[in-house]
Image (cartoon, rainbow, N blue to C red; front, side, top):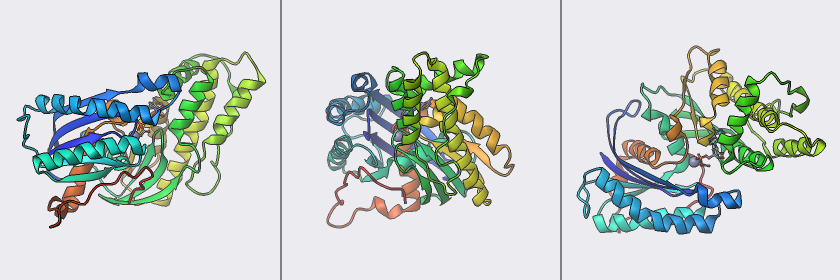
Length: 353
Ligand code: KG4
Ligand code: ZN
């Protein structure tokens, strides 16, 4: 099945064409075309993503990327032989989401192809299917991005139950905000990670910088990251000569320890699970990966699956793959109702399940 997918939920415009077949646990995926334009450099000056600017850029970028992707896939440019168009409908920035949706629906009309909405977080979950190996369910997914921090129970493909989530900031957002306090550019996650790793190889003691581990003993699977960011601010106010590398490490140690301990609790409570899936931009974090590997090694029946670095942050490949799963589980969505296709709506706060 050939799927054209479009992602515009935040500051990345992305288009892909995948040819996918085979079982959901281990699909046979051919990437025919894949393009992405990041707006990071443009948003950097605002220290975060500026929605109206993102919208303008998506409008400008989408036609260019579509043309490139179709060419890359060696398909006929006017009426490419695809089976389906998939577009991210949420969660994300609504003005940005609408650009992708409108574009996808216009293509659908022009090419007479079905268009289906995809939840961005489902994309992050299934990114791990691009890696080798059969994926066994049930699973738990730890979703960690700029907008989300969630533990999700996956009973079967398409069946999700949120076990816990952040009550305020997302962990990626905390990385970005702390980076800003340390005078580092946006997005802050990779910057913090680099500094923290340098501090770890040094022989310096960082005990005096130790930060609280918010909600680590709360007894549930929820998170909170806004207090941790404030704790960093207080430390920075206390003393003028705090080493940035050490501060980054103290923050990262605290932020990651909570993620790992809550995930351990989730696995302990659901002993039937076979796989721990990690998804979202923060899954690229090397310290998180190391600590999760250690934790999961204590559960011999659980396999840890992380996406490759390029698939951890936003892209259109993951949207195409999530669309394949949706169609396989609900084949009827390929046959639109008699009155034509129901218009797709952007849902900034779309939930899984
Ligand atoms: O999934 P994503 O690309 O976009 C959203 O859906 O939000 O995630 C972006 C987030 C940003 O907050 C960024 O700082 C964070 O992922 N991030 C990282 C790393 N790489 C990206 N955080 C920590 N360590 C990293 N290496
Ligand atoms: Zn994302």
